[in-house]
Image (cartoon, rainbow, N blue to C red; front, side, top):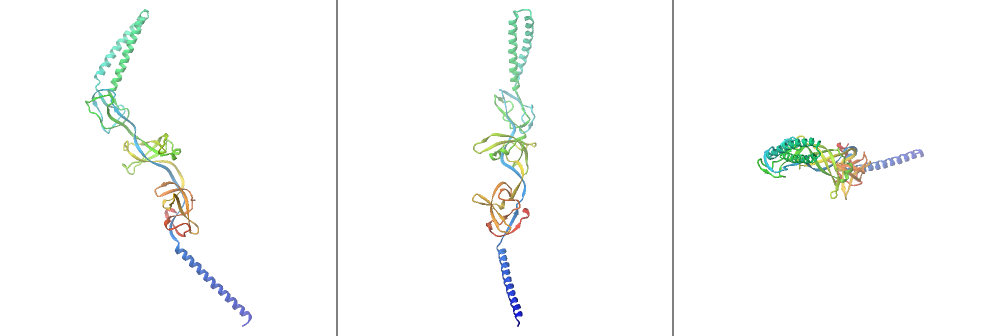
Amino acid sequence: MTQKNSNLIWVLLVGLSLFVVYLFFQNQSIEEERKAESSATLVTTQVVRHSALVRQVTSLGTALANESVQIVSNTSDYLIELHINEGKLIEKGQLIAQLNDVEERARVAELSASLVDQKRQLERVKNLAKTQATAQSLLDEQQTRVNTTQAQLDAVKARLNEMTIRAPFTGVLGLRQVSEGAYLTAGTVLTTLDDLNKIRLEFSVAEYYLAQLKPGMTVNSSSVAYPGKVFTGQIKAIDTRLDPVTRSVKVHALVSNDELELRPGMLLNVSVTLAEVQALQVSEKAIVPLQNKQYVFVVNQDNTVTQTEVQLGQRMPGLVEVVSGLNAGDQIVIEGTTKIRSGSVVTPTVSKAGQ
């Protein structure tokens, strides 16, 4: 065998050996990848994106009548007429009750006639005073009589007006507290009158939201008595003082109540829309609470995960706002968080809802 052939064989043997070594390490690498894949945890993920978020504050409120009064008797006498239809609408100025006013009417007639006569005498004395200086004293006396009678007549007319009780505004009558024919004393309550066309809604809001509240903001409210129905109104007034114990401020809103469904005293769930913004929102299932802090697992490019602290904002059903700690485009684990820890290898499947 020549020297040339010997060298060729040697080169072939060396090349073959190197190829065998390459195949060995290639198989090892593939095996390691298979092992890694078999040890990776299956998780469901969500891609973090900005979406519309309605910032709102919620509270519990109490319904109050827009206007509410007790209908009372301001004088004493027998009740001769009563027009109280419980729970029925009554117009402003409509008669509610009439007390016996026979004496007052007679007294008005008597004083009116006397006043006419005294004014006639006053005119005669005035004419006399133009020619006789001594008639001035008579003029003064007669003027005093006229003024006194006029004052008496005004007082009796005022008492006569009190004998007739009318609705001070349009509203709904409450329960009747007296009966026709009863003797009423001053201050006796006959019934109540509530203006229910609009409901005054009173609720409290935490001090944190005070700077964001403004009159005119939309208020939505609901009651367990009317499931699925929303009563809409607007903020009308914000109290100038805060409760030093609860650190909250009282707010009054007017809510439409055209069908008279809401009644004073009802408890309502209240929400006030503060603003609509673009914010990062993630599934609440992604949040991992730990020692009074909140974390999520962020999936890295090499399919490992990193436990990342986040600051949370407003919560909605199934969702929570992330104020800091994440960026748009981040992929986070929303199912399988209990099976992994920081550094774990995962096989992510993006949720259709989170794509």
